[in-house]
Length: 179
Image (cartoon, rainbow, N blue to C red):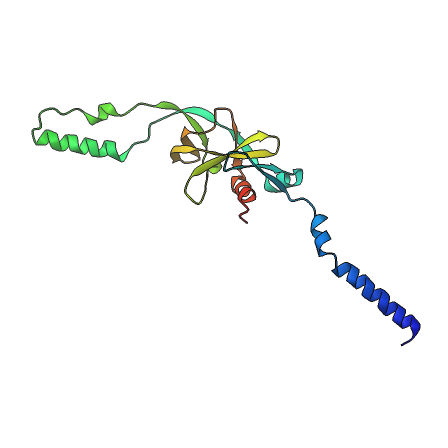
């Protein structure tokens, strides 16, 4: 081998060692992810802040929680009570009240879109609320019932609070690391 060839081989080997010896630095120079996830002290949820690019890709949409007058949910128990009343009346039972009189009338209730509700592995229902621009926090919701595109809440975010109606599953994945 000539001196020139040896020099070229040494230069190539040195360059290869420099490139291959840098895996620790590669992680330090990587780009930040599309979401910043920050644990909220004293809570089991995190704050998810999306980059502008992630907002565009995910197409996140929000809808305010609103109130609406809705009919009460018909429970199986009221139907059973009506059957019991009918059976007791025929049997000659002394004091029987009309079960239909005990059903509540329409109520003003908090409503969110059905698409805003997500469930964790334990079956707990949640909705993401928009706390700041591009920032979302998962909040528990207690559902009375869902009908079509609406979900009637027993408990949840205050009226006027913006909840994520499109993209909640993606936020849950970002928060929990599910891919």
